[in-house]
Length: 260
Length: 248
Image 1 (spheres, each protein chain N blue to C red):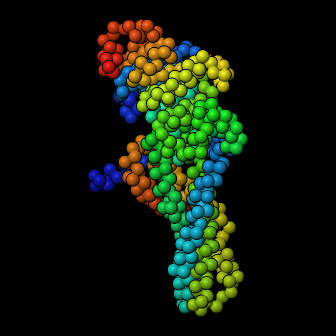
Image 2 (image 1 turned 30 degrees about the vertical axis):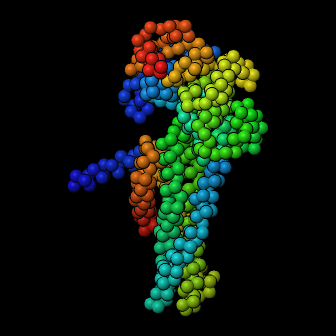
Image 3 (image 1 turned 90 degrees about the vertical axis):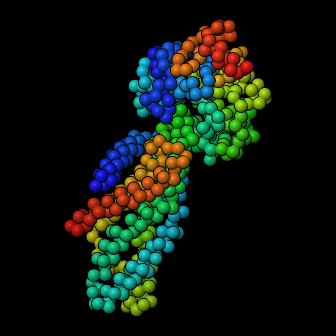
């Protein structure tokens, strides 16, 4: 009980700090939106390439694996039990609303996020952050805002690619195993199951995942006083906290989806 | 600074030097000396508005450092050049050119291409043009310290704070630094010809005797202004003698 209480208090304290850090970063993004664009824009583009373009192949591969394992089998099962009318709602619920956004965020976290914690933590530990401040450069604007933009844009776009690759791969597998449905007909079934609210909700969910992932990464890299030997622990903590936070956010969307 | 207590950078509640009453006038060159760990670096970082302090008031260019926030603080810092000790806290993964260009690009909203000419001529002035494309994390310490000086000067600050300018340098670098600092003090044409205000912190004051106009010492948590060069050299202050004798 004592341990659970300690853990809960620690989680609350961290949430409060990360929340404050997020507000500062979002405030900086808004108030310094047009400041030094020739320095900040290339850095944001670099982050989009790092967290988005470079991660695209693995996201497509995972999307196809998801398609083969989940979509292909589910579709065939529904055909076997004569419940094809459930195909659309099931695919939308499982792939579009739940798995794709969460998996895209987790891939970005694993592939780029851990490296970003080390990069920021090293900058903090060797005094590069103080050097920026001494030059009159706001470290949040220079180091955090490009990551916030880059990670968020990447997670939003990668989710779309993951949904598409999962559905395409799922259809191909189901087709070769005897699904008698034309591709257009299959995608029409999925499209019919989508309501208009799904689009803003998906955009909102992926945006929240992007902001959350980038902020937890930047917080653990920058805000906690770090020594080089603490970097490993900070990285592990980042992964665990981002995973938990993403699942909690995912759960918050559940009542909204149930009302649809 | 009036009645200021500076603190340890990693322990903001731990006083390092207390009772600092210090006024630096435009165009002066101060040498602040003391043993390693006596609080010289903390003092410079406090003056640059990078570190909080426990008591007293710090005013730089008329602005209260503790009360300044956000853009006001950043604007004040742009008028101060701070050269850190050692490798100068350069951005190790970026090139020397990118390190020096960063403040210019950020504050002037320029791309690296647009800043190329100005930065290249600046690097030439500092004798760094051959290192321009090397990663800053891979160059030797004396050169890194000079790159840090170039980065601090590119915005043409009014006040330059240098931490241990001559430590661990060979004779050639020492000569270069002394000549350059004297030219800054006299008014370097590249900086508008106006004498620059200098504060040099060092644990070995003797090589700076010919440059410094006023001297102060931090020792065992206390601050003492010693006056000009003659007072410094002939001071019978036991703490200063202890500090100087340890070097003999």
